[in-house]
Each structure stands twice: as structure tokens, then as C-alpha cells.
Length: 398
Image (cartoon, rainbow, N blue to C red; front, side, top):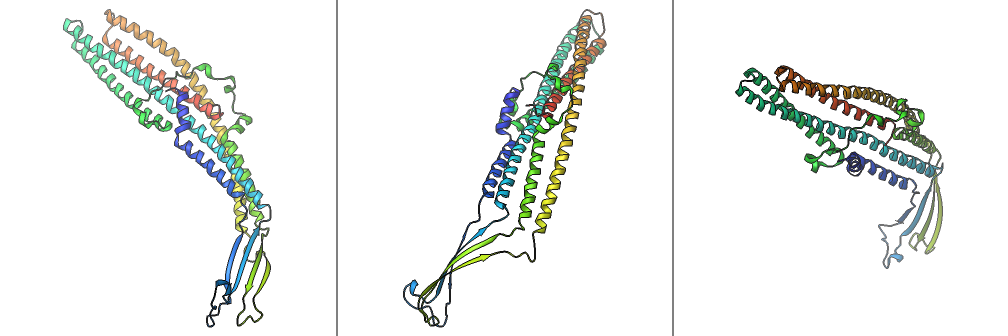
């Protein structure tokens, strides 16, 4: 699997990203709800029912009961509908920024997991090669022991190092399987866990652009999705504050009613119809929405504090990522040089031992040194790759 293929799977299958997309859909639905106007209310009633005299015979129209039909409509004031729509749209935009932030975080986690599997594969390869080398050395030592070229103690030393190399190879293989599980979980590839392998080369030192030598500037910070989302939430909190204040602007209801009065013992004038119009206005005698307004003020202050915290964390993340990147690149340069020297020293020790110019202890020391430096060199590549991924995430460079 290449890194590009892994990122495609991440976007299509990662459960956290899918949940963030559902949050956007929910925010879009809230925007539709925010624009809704109050529905009218239709009422139907019967009155003047006399239990003693009854309601009379005949059809429903001839019953001696009064009939009322009424319709009421609430009219909002204080631009509340427009404020609700603006608030919902602001939250919808913030949800979109949250999705981008989730992708940024999960992409960083993916790249770290990808390089963790890469380093596990390299460690497994180095450990396996070392174990195979020692296995061949044990066979050769047995033959030389039979020929009287080396002592039994030397054979035992080689066998001990061979067992140690075999144990290291098994541990490296277990680490590789753990890295496969982590990558499979991020990419939704659990069914392929046992066969997952990465194929991209390690990032090179030439990948660092010139601007990576400088700390994050304000323009770069403002491009980060978490900063954008925090600013959107300030806008949302401001709209919510205005909406809460608008609650003190009284709404009113208009109603229209039709009444039918049939002839009865109490209504000697006969059947008649009448109409009525009503206006309803709330009286803020007990409560004037002080709690809602105060809560909105608190939420607005909290949104401002959240933006300041997000900016501080973004700056710190950028500074930390930049420092780690430079430190990792310096370490990688040193280990590139050290590994070349260790390989030459190990080749010389193998040649000298084969020709009887040195003892088995010198050979084993050279092999241990080479294996340790090979592992450290792989670790240095992995640290550089992780630092490079963290820096790209810090500046939102995808």
C-alpha cells in the first residue's frame, strides 16, 4: 500500500471522518429548521351544552350547541428568524471546518501509523537478515570445530548470539503485526490486517522546503481548520447572543374566530353567526429571559477564550514540529554517515575472521555494532518521517 492509497482509504472509510460528515448533514438540517416560520393553529370547539335539556335531535347542524372555529398565527419580531438562520449557517460552516480539522488530525495519525509499519518492516528485515547470518555462522562454526580450527567455546559464543538474533527477529515481527493493526484500523482495512505492507520510500532530507526553516506566521495559522472553526464559533456565539437579546422583543399572535349560534331555549333570536378578531401579547411580569441572555454572554466569552487557546496551541504545535523536524534531520544525516562506516567495519571484520586474522569476539562485536546501528538508522528515518508529517500537519500542508 502506498501512502496515497492509504489516505484515499482514510477519507473513504475512517469512522471518525464519517461521523464528522454526518455532523455537517445534521447542521444543514438545523439550518432548514432555523428558517421555518411558526405554523398557524386551528381550533374547533363546542359550547353551551345543556345536560338537562340535551342537544336536540336531527343532524349535527341542527344540534342546539354553539360551534366555534378559530385560527391563530404567531408573528415573530426582533429579526429572530434571520438571526436563527445566520446562527445555523455559522454553525454549519464551523462543522465543515471541524471536518477539515478531523481530516488533518487523522491524516497525521495515518502518516505516523504508516511510517510505524515501515520502520517495523525494516526492523523485521534487519533482524531477520541478522538471524539468518548467525544461523549460517553456527553451521560454519560447527564444521570448523570438527576440523579443529576453532574451540568449542567460540562455537558457544556464536550460538548464543544466534539465539539472541532469533529472539530479536521474533520481537520485530510482533511489532510489525501491531503496526499492521493500527494502520488497518485507521483505513478501515481490518479484513486485510495480516497482509498489510507499505511500499513508499522514506522521505528524503531534500523534501524540506525553504519555508520550513521559519516558524509559523499569522497567515499560516489562520489557514488552519481548527483556527477557522474557532473563529466561526465566535460568530455563532455572537449571533446566539443577539438572538437571546431579541427574546425581549415581544411576539404577538393574531386570531380570527367564527361562531355559530343555533336556536335554543336560551337563544330565542334563532340561528346566527358572528365573527371575532383577537390579538395576544405576552406580558413579561415574572420573567424577561435573563437566564438565556446571561448564558449567551457566557458562551460568547467562552468562544473568545477557546479561540485564544486554539491559537496558542497551534503556535506551540508549529514550534514543536519545527524543532523536532530540524533535530530529526540532523540525526538522520549523522546516522547515514555512521551506517556507512559500520558496514565497512563489519565487512573488514568478516574478511579478517574468514582469513584467520582475528578472533571470534572481534567478529561478534562488529556484527552487534552493525546491527545496532542499522536499527538506529531505521529509527532515525522513522523519526524524520514522523517529524516531517507533524510539520506538514501543523501548517495544513496536504
